[in-house]
Image (cartoon, rainbow, N blue to C red; front, side, top):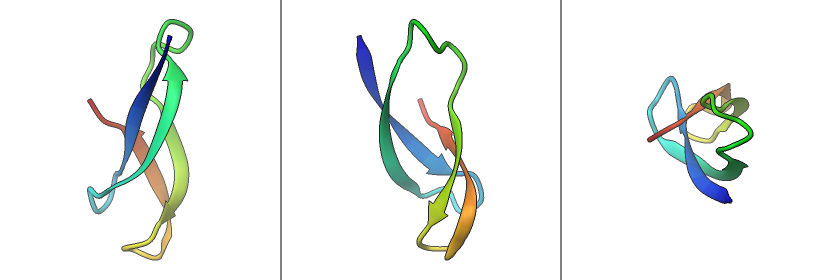
Length: 49
């Protein structure tokens, strides 16, 4: 039931992280504040398709 998703930095566009989530329980796209090593700061990372 859990699917692997990729998290993309909203500022630079790099796909830095992978995560898993249950798509039946959480239908909206995931947004997490994480560290981007290219920008060297915390940014919002959004789930990609």
